Length: 206
Image (cartoon, rainbow, N blue to C red):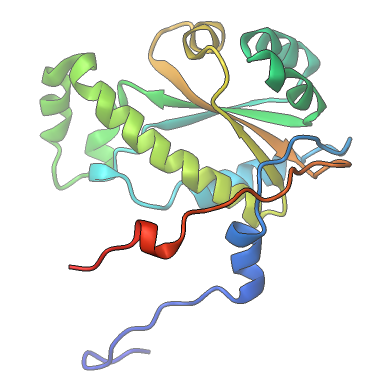
């Protein structure tokens, strides 16, 4: 147990964990014909839900598309280059932003229950950027959580977001922000690793 005078320490991922989540992780373009159990899909969310969002807003909502009927509804709404790999994936997650996330603020931020009314007064347009930004944060957490479960991920921005939202979220409350294929990698699943910027092109010190 850490005393009041000791500096607390945090756990550090070993090299294997870092490779699994970051340096060896790439977008998958083909998937093995192996199902992903419901327990794994639930467990992914049990990790992805914990990292921070602004005012703990948590606007991300996840729809797992895994039936043939669901896949046939989704495929025509994707860019043509994304259809074959999505057809090969055992599960595709539609990640959406809940534009009425503020309704949960008294639960998510009980010390600031007034946020619900403030965000309600802002209207949907006033909440849109907050919903989209924080859902995008959570989408990144979702990818890491899926990788932590040994799954390959294939995130895609090439889809008709308005059409996907209308098809899968007809009430208008949720708006799709990312589509992610999930599963074990198939043959020739990965392209060669593409370059990254050098440190001196990215980092600065002040």
